[in-house]
Length: 295
Image (cartoon, helix red, strand yellow):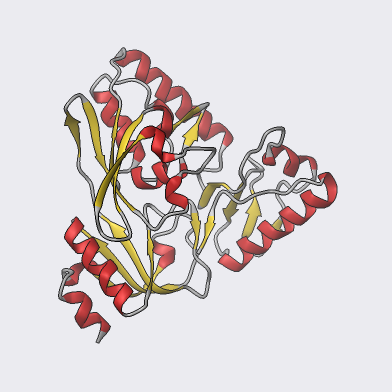
């Protein structure tokens, strides 16, 4: 019955029933979602959001699944993945859909001799997720290059806000607290030297390979940095580097990462997160705040 209603507004090839979310999450863990639906345009997005509301089904908007843990019990509701993938130069700005990987945005900037996007080259998320999280690396954040964002509000209006209205802070924006769906953003253009841009991107890529456990499934930094608190340093100091619960392990390469060694479950990862938080609180009286989202 629900499937038939969904299919009235969404192409059947975009509707996946009882979808295993481990296929869509960088940690490669998690149970099934009742429905996993890809939307190709705004009318499809509005249709599924309205339908979900009318039948009282929960929804969650998913980007690349690189900053999220889906529990083993799965998600009772509809996971929506917007395939908004335009990427071009419009009116002196870069215009990018919410579904564009930020690494692709970085490469697009490089090919067009635009500097300031090198830090995004190794970040695995999408534009939508990066704007929501104010993604950053190497002392740069998305807020530094963003001009404005277009989103769908809770009443299905298309709205545009400028940079200063995003309420950006460390790994956070206004989109955390609102039931709004990011459709796309525009970004600054500052001409640079293509050789210098390439060199900077290469240096950052090499640094990531050297310091981060890119060879194993993970979700990036698990805990947020705070003033005078670098989680990886405290975890290392506490002797937790390499500590395992089931198939989940605090990376031996970078203590700020938890990795799936091959057979981890979401339960293993969550247990390891809680054990780490408890240990750091006991040893250093610091509360580690999650940077990842548990769904």
